[in-house]
Amino acid sequence: MRIGILISGRGSNMLALADAIREGRIPGAELAVVISDHAHAPGLSRAMERGVATLSIERKGRTRREHEREIIAALQDHRVDLVCLAGYMRLLSPCFIEAFRLSILNIHPSLLPAFPGLDAQRQAIEHGVKFSGCTVHFVDETLDGGLIITQRVVPVLDDDTPDTLSARILSEEHKAYAEAVALIASGHYEIEGRRVHCISHQERHSS
Ligand code: GAR
Image (cartoon, rainbow, N blue to C red):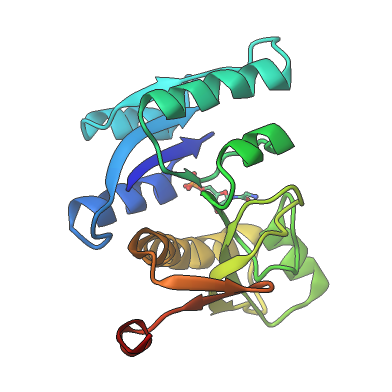
């Protein structure tokens, strides 16, 4: 399975996936390309330093459709099977989603469906929840509303700021994303309604 990762900034989730692939924790996966919509995204140079193919595709006054067309073409050129959004801060249009139906994943820093959209960690603190976390989900036409693949939970402490909570969630994000991509790459899952089930070794061999 050839993986393409879209980033906009720091790229720590992208690096966590790159490490997991290199260390064989995502069997059968290959990192095909990292694409950023910002030429100066720190994650882009970090990917380059590791010898990963990188592209910067900025929007530069073009329409969303034109920008997305170029990204889709680049993903197709690199024969990408699975697109992972890793801090990619743009909404994808229905055309993009259709081009990679059930083959786009996103990581979000809250326990969805709570706190979708921007500033999820601040939203969690302001709401007063005692636990938050991260969610890896399939991307559909809704805002952070696609089928949930995996979640990890962290406590919200009384003296948390958005920064301290973000840091606690981020280290769980790195584990959750690699686990979720490994599940999808293995094909050992099934979808029933909104539920994404992991199919156990026993179930696979008894059917
Ligand atoms: C991560 O916390 C990710 O969950 C979040 O942006 C950060 C990117 O960090 N994404 C969103 O909020 C998307 N709605 P990274 O660039 O170091 O991976």
